[in-house]
Length: 161
Image (cartoon, rainbow, N blue to C red; front, side, top):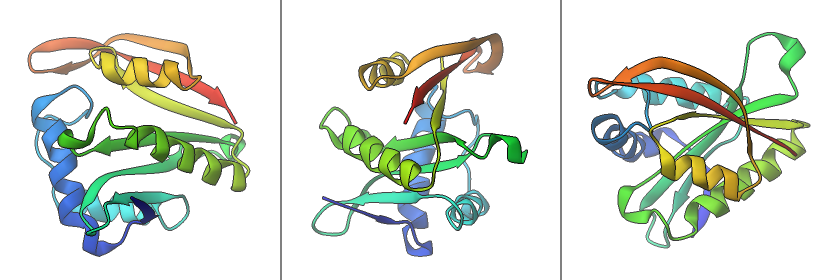
């Protein structure tokens, strides 16, 4: 397994993974599949912040993760928000933990001192994953999201690095 910066050549695999979560879970906050413009936007963020793909030894993309600004105001420069998604066949194998550790090291190197994760209250797997890795719930915005005809809270979890 290798973790390398995302490139344009990874866009199709990134979109396949992300769109799985768009269509089948509360992990993505989108209701409709996203296209190349979304991948390009992520790659643009990756010019300033870590945008990593996880690949197996054959070069297959197993997942991706990125650190992005929490807010455009420069008073929040030391706070980064994390996003990551794994191919559905690659969950619960430790890959997410390795990806989080890698992004955390990249955050430290970039002088980020706080990591945030925005998680749907209906995504119990992600909430448990973040608790396991030392994140604490710091805010909850009740009922602000709706997907699949169901309301959900947005839960912010935070960890100092």
